[in-house]
Length: 579
Image (tube, rainbow, N blue to C red; front, side):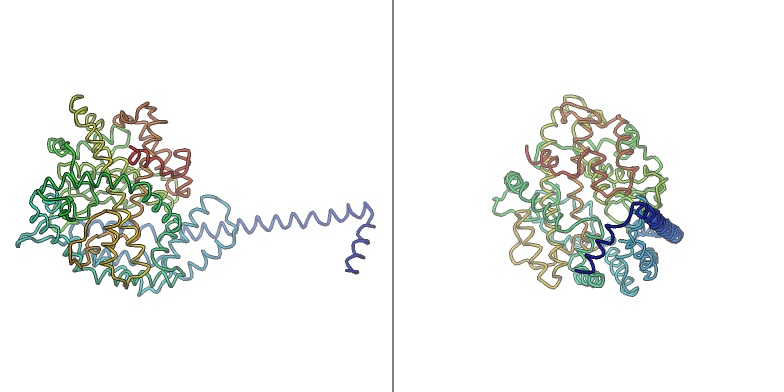
């Protein structure tokens, strides 16, 4: 204390001229420090640029080759094609498993010296890609091979009834159209057999994923997957809990309406209704309970041509995508539908198994919705920013377009039905869309909570956990005495882990976009009259505000820039719950 007091007194006696002299001594130090910071910033940004350039030189060609191989395997179903796809996927992931590269990137990131926004955004995304692969190569390869093996099993599996093999389309047709309880029960039970065949493999894969997550410092793969995907697990859980509360009452009401209809359809009491009576393998889609046959409209038209004409009319042509796509059924081919962005430079392809009905009209609009997101990216953006802001934002755009298949105004505009026909189907069509959304929201709750629970404890009774979730959120009865791995018959659990929650979040985004376009782009007074068709300003808005930005912004920042506010579930609730 004494020494400090002396120092203070001495400092107070310094003459002004000495103060000025000291100021000149200090200034160069400040300038020098600033100069050091600038030099450090320039050095780190140069190091990051060099890192990204070297990464892209390896990443881009292998990414393209791997995407092509995966697409080809999905078409052929051949074991050798799946083997090639698996090998290339492993080689691609190996890029991001480099410990030395990750150490270099980590040093750059932790320096805090990267200030350029595009560079920093690339750094954050690439860092997560590396972090998720900092595991033993043998374990990484085992994980990829295990998943590919299961994917191949699903792709080539066919339901068998009385010695006859049925495609998924045929299974869905029987469940949707049959009025015979025994027939739908037999088909539903047969569709679950794939679960018995892959369940042990899926559990092994889940544990392997958890091992990877533990190695990287996460509690489990579920937590790791969300955090590395730019989502906070607590936020997603809260969102789903909120949506559960918001939809539970409305769903219970429409569920009773469905039960009344289906009991009458099958000539049984409501108490006798079982999961196979709901016209779908998982009750993830709404049964047809309203007096409107939209399939009848689509049987008369070429749904692919309708899809092409629609996208052309809004300024988002898909001609080149269609040429590269594989859209109809064939032996061995993957029976689902997806869109693959091969090179992030315009080579986007759709795989489908199209038929002329409402389901496949919706699906084509959906998958080509993904493709217009892909092909209208900003080619001036760096490779790793030439993707959707988040997986759920591209799903949201796809859902936004897929919904059009049941919209009466869209059907009139694109199929040429009369005003009278449109008015005739309007009420029932909109009720059907609301029903579909409520059914899907409850199904998504099942998937979300089941997967979360499975990764938290894969050794628990997963069969019991599955039916607990089904009974709670879908209000379905578990068949008496059933103790089979029905959960494992859902392909997404094995091959697209901890992703399904994004489908429901994407519906929230789709509703937000729907209201924004109606109110601010097309400026209609009544959204029931909203027509997207032949409005190129819709395509321009989507391209400028959503497609071109790619992932240069964090997803909620992109949504705010596109709609004026961050993701808000109120639009989904307003559109589908509050009616």
